Image (tube, rainbow over all chains, first blue to last red; front, side, top):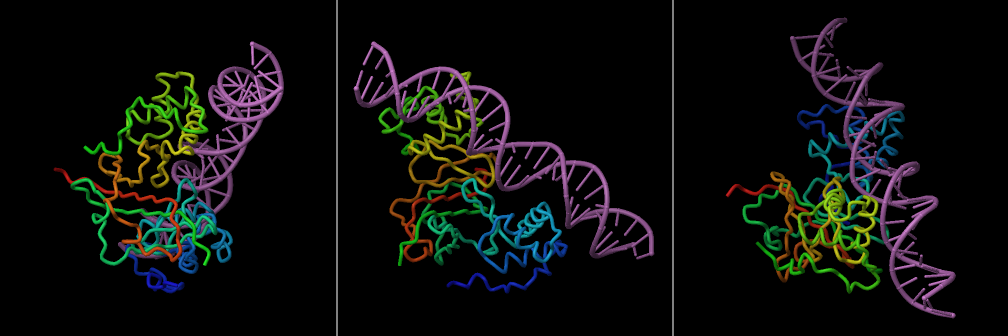
Length: 141
Length: 141
DNA sequence: TCCTAAATTGGAATTATTCTTGATATTGGA
DNA sequence: TCCAATATCAAGAATAATTCCAATTTAGGA
């Protein structure tokens, strides 16, 4: 399994993130996301966080997630019209949605590739964000 | 402007689509999408369709859009958590969302490129659907 | 310590979409 | 052609994810 992109430990906390007040709620939301990198929904995050912070509200989980996304500590990922999911891998990457298991796998770009190598970009386009989602199946092996 | 992918005229109708009963509502929804390829939402489609079918309901527009998507005549596209948009270009392509104008541009793949050329796919992955969305700006030219 | 701004909470509100139901229309077969 | 089975349509209700709101709590700096 590829751990290259997951080199922060589950307990590492983004204490040094400028302009971000690290409240217990935000800390726990972040910890939960780092501890299990399975792209949970806000609801799932809420369930997990409640184990340590039983009184935290779903609204707060949404607030925390939004704040962490805004500070670049996590990423929000959307598949079709489903609930948003949250991803602790902040490296640039895509996702593969396995239709059989429902699991979501991170997909790295091969080193050295450039968007313009395979896409007909409009002239003058300055790309700020890329979202690549693949859906399919894993052949039984 | 690239018209290669838009070679069906705005009036061509998918009469030959097997298993699809071409009702006036579906026909008009389809016509509207072919006539202006600007990725409208269901609501926008509803507004446009009402010019000719003043009594059509939004629910019917949703039904028609879903049916057309299921039959492969149009595509549904989602950006972030926004309303779904509908796309009359059924060729495989991505989208570029211009943050300045809000416009959505179709992005073609360069000929001959292969997904596996630039993505680290999991071994045995069989890809059934690809979604590529770029967000950014067009440099003033 | 006190003050102020920011964060949290619970519940209400919002919004896109889906569902339900009854009416209507269309099809294929007798 | 006529009938029965099936598909579609319309309207509004229902759903579900997310955001908003007002009140309370918390934390950091003067």
